[in-house]
Image (tube, rainbow, N blue to C red; front, side):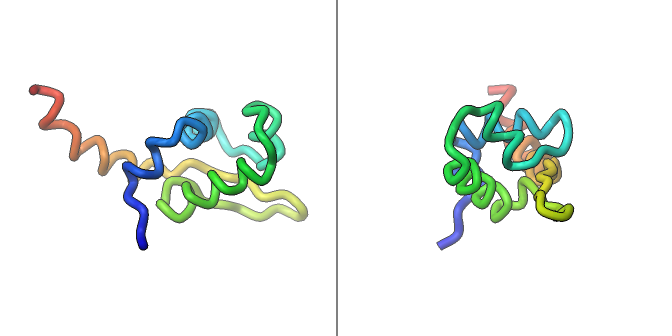
Length: 86
């Protein structure tokens, strides 16, 4: 079963993660500290975001850095454009 982009971004904590990644790459621990939710929960949300193509991960020694991919969001924005006039 594939998850749609809408299903992924509807979750509030995932949107918060995307908001944080707008400012730059972050590690899981950074996100845990800011979001104040458990590390396994953050990792679960990051996995969903990664599978939807919204983030990419870059390993760096023992850390994994997550980076926002804006392309899927642009596609979503293009789809939403005609509805703004309504």
